[in-house]
Length: 158
Image 1 (cartoon, rainbow, N blue to C red):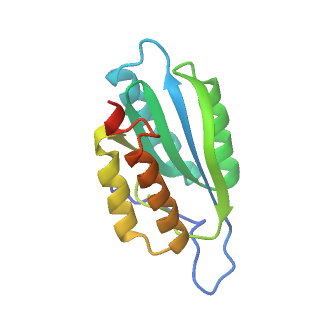
Image 2 (cartoon, one colour):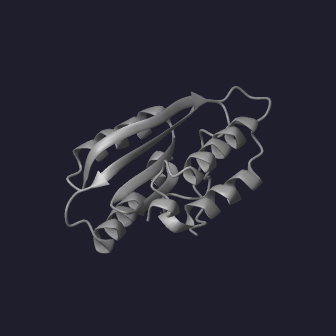
């Protein structure tokens, strides 16, 4: 797990007026020929691009499906989503959820971490166990339920 610290000027500070933290979850299909090397290139690019824009998140890849959680300043996250929609390695990009609120990050130390589909449950459980914000805990429980029901292309569909 990548634990490089990301400078978070957009993190809520108790007792202060804080900017909102935007997050979105999308999934997409990988185009023909996307292999481990292509996914590693995506991660390397993310690790160069995301820290300067205060974007953190999680990328899951398995069974030819990308599933990604992105969080950070709204304009930065939306600009990244626009780039992803134009990326020839993705097709059928589907926005699953998005929101903007004052809250802690779910993945504060991950500029972008690749998680295989068979390990995503462990990542979500770890995030749930450390979540201090009730809204985050609720979102993580919902994702775990969807994963367990086979709705996210997780282990039960591999």
